[in-house]
Image 1 (cartoon, helix red, strand yellow):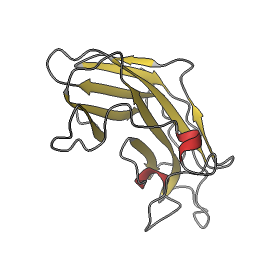
Image 2 (cartoon, rainbow, N blue to C red):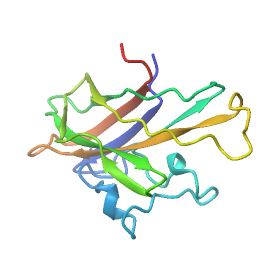
Image 3 (cartoon, helix red, strand yellow):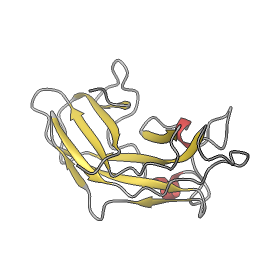
Length: 170
């Protein structure tokens, strides 16, 4: 097994790959200037998953005759020894309404060294223009962003958060 995305946060001081403090991530529905504006990659402003944030995961479907829905997002948290659980909110991007939507109705608990599964809606993008066969190239995809919320007074150190899309429902 290998997660498809990992990002880091710190408590007290930045160290190693952790350059953003835990709890500094903001609700994406309002943080990007105009409400609903996606984070953008300077080289490809249409590609939300390659954004200027590190806590997003893009699930692209390639080579399928029909898009494969994302059923859940698996999240793993690993922090310093004695780290308490954190909570998180998962957001999904909808390109038609140009808006991020909260997926979970209340914050999800992320326990130390434990996999947490978050049910995910999968509004797959349509097949890109020019791909009339529907059998090759990208079939669209879906983008998610995980916003971690520290619980109480978190233990000082570096925290890693790994994410993967689960495409089956078993």
